[in-house]
Image (cartoon, rainbow over all chains, first blue to last red):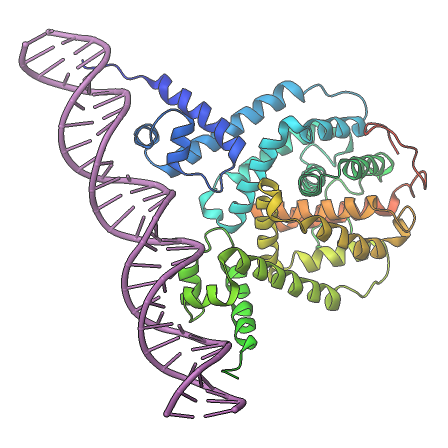
Length: 204
Length: 204
DNA sequence: TCGTTGTTGAAACAGTCGTACCATAAACTC
DNA sequence: GAGTTTATGGTACGACTGTTTCAACAACGA
């Protein structure tokens, strides 16, 4: 009995809130301007999400969901050589349409470096990519459980994204990707499948 | 006539403020807690720096100055092979003592991605590193004015720093550096000294 | 001692923040 | 209609923000 709940309203608000955060960033986010932009009230935001912290968590989850969906539909076709696949990944992730996600990514990670306790799930996000990238670069990998190749590729792409976002020098970034792709192509096909445990300064 | 000015006070405050920001981050920085930690008052901070914005700018400049000094004295000895130099750079920058600087670096860059207008000097900071890294990897570079090699190395190191800072998985990061170093060693010594202008998807 | 310049404390200002409280309206069952 | 649950609006609270204002004190030259 009583008025029926309307969970769709929360979903609509969440979707628009994610748009807003992707457009305006997390840093200065505050309830009143957000509510105004969403044609609602701070009162309703708290009613639907409980607290600002939970709202932010929901927005980040939504953004991650969208990103994953785009990856699934845009990036899956694994074509041709590893170099071409790398260039495809780079072209996709560095496209202007992805810029809001990239911006939010760096914002979240920068805060996570300072306050890791607030982002207990970020570690898993990293390891999730191992599956995707590991599959993409299977022929370069050191066995199916190789995490080093995905780590290296991810690091280069993220570092270049940061460079590109700050300097805007796309040509230099694109050339660095090409150079790295060439290195991958000519590179040594990995030394030992099961590495002897050793110090960090010993080559593998 | 009149009481003589004491510029040393501002310098002392600045040094301690830089310590504080390196320890506590830029994100939630506010004058009252900062002043309390520095045994001074918000009044004096504004008296010495004019505004919070100028204070932050001065602190960032100070942090950059310190970082550059450490680079100059710790990192200059260019020894042995490029791979060993790369590992040296990585060991230095990823050491726990550098963690506060790395954290601040990502904090600033994340904010700079969102609000580039506040950081007009960051572009130059990037290009300054070309000199250092370009010299370090001269034997791998495509001519003395090559920016692609430094860009690639910088991207990998920064990407790995972000990974390391978030996941804490040092062994995986170290191995990725080793793998990259091996790639550099076996890599093609660059195709063309003066590249034909072309699209981003054309190999170089 | 006086005027002058630099330094400092205390308090207040105007604003924003997240959130809680209280009332009321809307939609449903009986 | 009453009873009950969900959805809102309005408002105010307490804590915080960067900054300003007013006053006083400190150190110097004359």
